[in-house]
Every structure is written in C-alpha cells, then in structure tokens.
Length: 93
Image 1 (tube, rainbow, N blue to C red):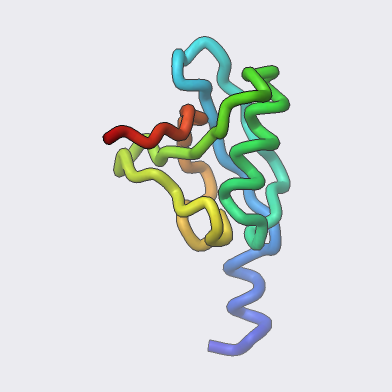
Image 2 (cartoon, rainbow, N blue to C red):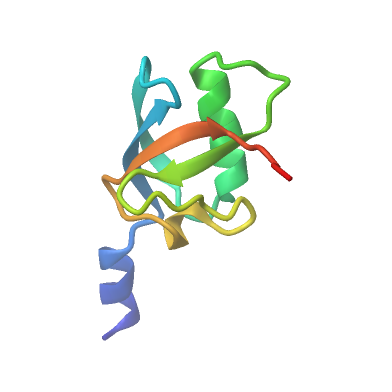
C-alpha cells in the first residue's frame, strides 16, 4: 500500500458521538485530531457539556465498555463514528 493510499484511508481528523454518563447530553464531536490524547479529548468534551470542572473525566467505548487510555492518541483507540461515554474517572479500593 502506498503512503498516499494510507493517508486517504486514515485522515488526520474524524468524528464520533459522545454522551455524558447520565445520558442526558449527547454531542457529535467533529474534526477531532486523531493524534490528541484521549484524556485531553475527555476534558474538552466535559467542558463542552458543562460538566463539573473539579472532576477528572475519562472516555469509555460504548461498544466494548473499555476505558480509553488517556495518554494514547484517541485515533488509535476508536473508529470514526464510535459512541463514547464521558464518565468520571474513579479509583476504587
């Protein structure tokens, strides 16, 4: 596969749907840069939804129920059109 073909299949930005943990708000995040860390995207979505600022937020893939690694690029962890939940990051135990 040529480099130009790979770039055509994997654009620099993509879109996905995100809901807050209660399901009362849903937004479509458009033109999100694939290289952004998932943690930064979670914080941006929480601010966009006007969720409490004093809470650490994480993203969970609704299909797999897996939490995204906040330090890895979001584009490596989900596909375009994915549905995510913005959820409080908790440490139990």
